[in-house]
Length: 102
Image 1 (tube, rainbow, N blue to C red):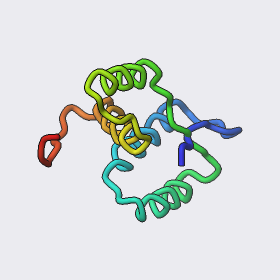
Image 2: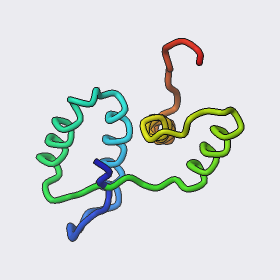
Image 3: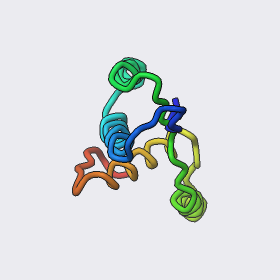
């Protein structure tokens, strides 16, 4: 599921950034059973291009420290959702989160 390395295709920088933006903005919105369909559509639009997740080292270290300080469990699903929200905020000017407080 973490696919964001450009293989031998000769993509212009703008095309790759557009693809990353499409993935970063839309992927967090989908339910688990919709993700394979989304990846299929991306593969149809950009055949042969594999996009792997960017590793946000400083962000992940900060998340780990904050989890430890607040006695929160640092589970993969939680980290994935935080990372998706972070990536979405990098390409959007604003966002809305709904739900109760923890």
